[in-house]
Length: 271
Image (tube, one colour):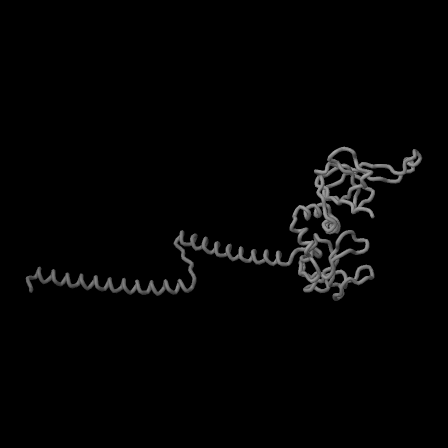
């Protein structure tokens, strides 16, 4: 029984080669022609058989998982070993950049491993992030890697299928209410919800901060803008102080009058 091949993801850009059938090479007794090609990070590869490995230490000979004609020999430090499950999750991501970013963010891979039918997610559909429920996780014909079938539970009609892929049913949902996507199109529902809650809390804090700054600014220029309850209390206090002021003024006038009368009596010699 053949041993499972070791799978890797490339961490740095390298130069490899592609093997192509060539008539000129065939005339020289060679069946294939090697053409140099740039291999970018995020490429998924597997080790060649032991007999085809290089004799140079710390180097390994590899073949592309998607592109079987791709050959690469590089230091083992330029690679990271993957489990079969990790390789299949990453294989469904067509963009090498997104694939590499997903690998670097280990939480994303952990999320993909834990994801199973009936889990709630957000799925990227035409630049929108729509709520959905995972209905299928597994392989699809002609689609490399692990794919996810998702029902758009709150946005029926914005999908692409009813759970059928190439005339085979994988789950059931209303017409145009399902999609099949790779891991890079999915986001944990609880993470997105917590972000929305965090945004709401931040907005509330920012609103309070703006109110405080506005109040300080208005106080600085002698303008006061308080809550209605505070304003009502201030009016009551103003009324009390006003009455006290009026009473003090009346008492002051009364004392002046009495003092004036007394002075008049003394000056006129009256008792």
